[in-house]
Image 1 (cartoon, helix red, strand yellow):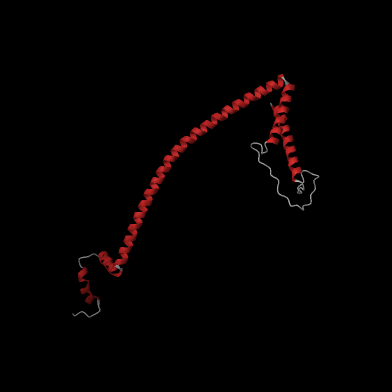
Image 2 (spheres, rainbow, N blue to C red):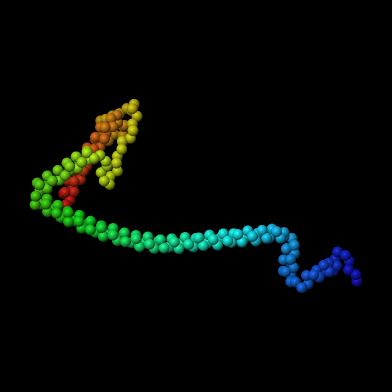
Length: 194
């Protein structure tokens, strides 16, 4: 029986060269014929370059991590030392202030008039020093007056009013007076508490 052209039996002769290969190998060989070899080589080169870059990046990150670990250990040790030092300083300062309070209490009980006079004179010295050396007191924010327009309508009657002031100097003077009153009342309360 003769094979008719175009039937599977007639094409069997064309597969004779693939008889020694398995089906997956034949499939791969067929795909290799479809794909351009230069494209495959360029993809392989690009993958090798990316692999080299990733290896370098990985090495740099490993070094960075190692340096960070070493510096963290050093900083951790220094931080513990500083924390311990601050705790010791706090204990020392608490002890010092406690002793100062005890001495103040004893002085105020033994010599009440002299103690009150000393407190008043120290407050007066603070006021004189603040007038000579302007600036905010320690640990208190500096209060700066806002610039005001020239034609603003003002009521200077109430010091707590929200109306803008015509004369900034009087406002600053009232602030200084209130700060002095606040300090003197706090220093009197401070002497009473102890």
